[in-house]
Length: 506
Image (cartoon, rainbow, N blue to C red):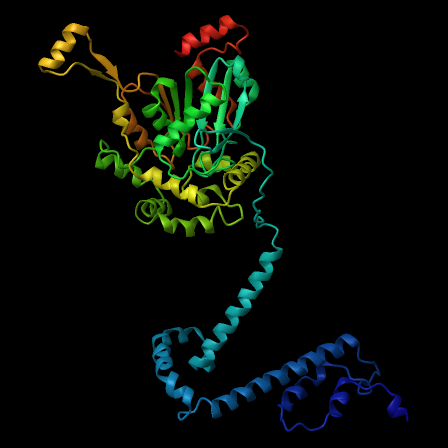
């Protein structure tokens, strides 16, 4: 009776199990007997702890599982991996060839593991375990930044109705229309929106110079309706209609940044009578410009990363394939780094800027507004516009003297009308700011512009990148406004001031 009520060890419990027919290596158990203290066997009479019982139980069952696995392996080898089996007949030849080609890797295994099947089974198992461990660690690693999902905000833009029935969204900053000494209209660049304008510029600074800044969403971006057949001519007309609708009655300045500069160039070409001047920052130029030399193209091309070159090639030849890349990046519903989303490389100063929290907040909000409609078509249209025929050349903006043609009829017309030679091209000021460390729009592009448009004023910025001068730089913004508009005079206060302002812009 005392034996029944007494506590049994885990070995006594296992001894009650019926014989299953399996034979295990008992030697391994005997060599480990001294490692455990069994109740009743200890000369000191100490009972075995629960922890020791669990450890012993797990070790014993581990050895049982190992022996069971070996037994299953032997059964598979004897029944399925024989020379007469169907599997060996079908897969034996290809496996042996692969094994011979990879036999050099056997040098990295112990002599008893020379069997290729055994070796590669071990490799596969270790790989799966390592992959599982990395996956678990990644989920709990606080050093890896979490991917932020895109958030679509409620509509908030002011909108105007265009003559063709489309709506255009815009955002204005600075002084109101009736007190504006200067009006500045800004189309945005690729993967941007009306919220960009001049990123980080302060409203008091605009008021100090009497500037009204109007930025708008391109067709299909933000809250603007898409255009059925969009080109740069229609882009210039959209800008003109917007100016007329929001009360810009005089000439206005146009601002072009990065790829948004092509819409500014279009305004200089198609509506020059309404443009008071142009402010360009790292302006994009079509590499198919007929006046651009091979050397100028090559210098620009070699500055781009491979992914940017691929995007350029697809936009020119296979634009529909851009859908896949855009859906995998900025249209995936998740935020990502700006250099990856735009397929660009950044200089040192740009890298430092984009890592700052205020820039990241601005960038995420701007992208969210840009992709609000979730439609890939406007982005493909914008990419194709950059690389296709613009319908004009920058050479068309050159200031040239046009005199009456030779011949009898032109001579008679000249005699009776006393017509004189007239200047053609864009006659107003053009200012260009170019960072010399810009790897998005490299300096060779601006070198080409300054060669073609000799009257343009180029401001070269040493050690500046694509974003570092234009974005979130209060001192830079003051320098820009001073260059464009002179000393600050504040907003208009009277009708007389309004007349003087109209005379200055006219």
